[in-house]
Length: 153
Image 1 (tube, one colour):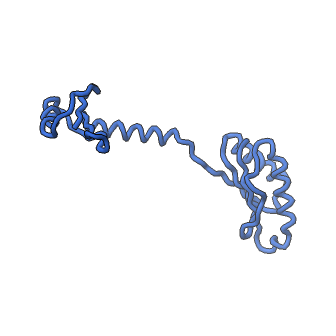
Image 2: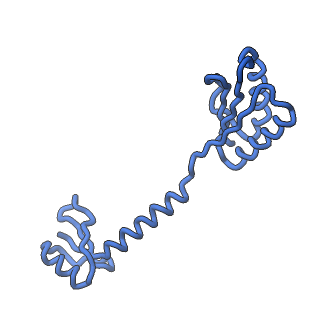
């Protein structure tokens, strides 16, 4: 096997017994880095420290990873003008922060008989939010609600 010392320099090709002896001389572990190459490559290193550094790198990568959060704003077809303006400000804030935003107009009871009110409200919301976000797809009925997802510009 090909052996690499702790500084990254190649020691040479040697048997497993000799490589383990070299690792014990350094007071470190012999770790197989590449088993597919011919001959296999092993490195003399502190395996515990190596695992610790790998976990730290994985943790940092996970922390910096962009998560696809989805914010949701729910309203009813009879939502009054002032409340609608407040919801629109929330939608604006979410879209400007870079979040996808799911907007739902939820119908309860006999409100389902007036789907046109909810559709008009959804059209108005889409019209007023077009400067901050774009529709992923046309508004669609899902159960007792009309749903649309806006993606930030």
